[in-house]
Image (cartoon, rainbow, N blue to C red):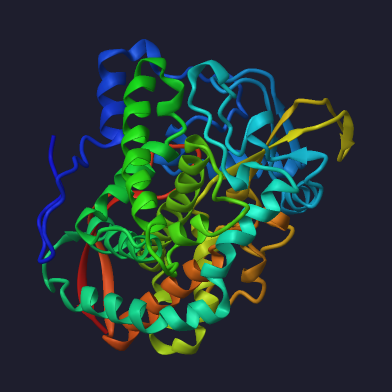
Length: 440
């Protein structure tokens, strides 16, 4: 097993390979019978449609027929597809009726498996009032004042990385830029040892891969990786708890919060996974999505180059177009009628954000990137209501600074080789994006 490459600050002792994706591919190659079977035409839990980027017409067909569609059988059990912007907002605005709690199934399409011992409570997978107290604990890390404080550091780190990129040479944007910037940001937020920062990406991939969680033979491997993460952070927790003055990092905030300082180990691990996946996968995939979209829509890249004042809106439009988390899930807490459909208590409703963000009734020419789009900010990539992403401002700040620093350097990035998308139904993004840098 490999370790992350040494840098000026030292070298990690911890393994960061094989990745969850590599383990899953190898297992399915050796055990093809474990490949999930999908038979329903609207079973959009199948990961191949995202890896091959052919999900759009399936969701468009569903949206044309109605906002809700029932899938009676899938590798993840029965579920409702919720595909329109209006329906998703309606459901998210009723958190008592449509629960996020891990006790009822949580926030992803996965079935609840109590016997596996892998349930990880986290505040996004809690209902009020417990959700409120835990969310309030970490929210101060993402206030406008904190964003202003972090602006200079994010800009410096982004600029230094962009200045180090080779010109006239093909390299992987995902690994070199997207992962490096987002793991660095997470390391700062957690007060995480810099030489081990790539562990955050490694853990995020294992925790956020819904497909690997369906393969029973890999449960033990996944459990081992998550325990490694928990043990590492437990050491950080103990070290921070002995400090006389609380620091500004997220772990210190948890330690000094009555709502979170009595968490059991699994709840602690669950909240760490939430913050790592939320801060890592989402921003890194949009950073890659921006480059891919500008290459696909060169007229929009030209607009960006000629009108830098469009950058704040371009950030919102790129988030809408990419939608880095494909879905969230809710569970009905009682029988109800929803948009003409009978929903039963315990029914699983999968809110497809990537479909809502292509909803033709809200976004004109929704399959096209348009950085002048007037209502781009109405995307649902961050969710809606009480569970809207707590780190949305930080994601927007990192993306805005990336575009501003690219523009300052008159940097144009071309797709110049392999494009490999994530093969998953939850995290929506890129695993590899070969590019070449030129100037405009």
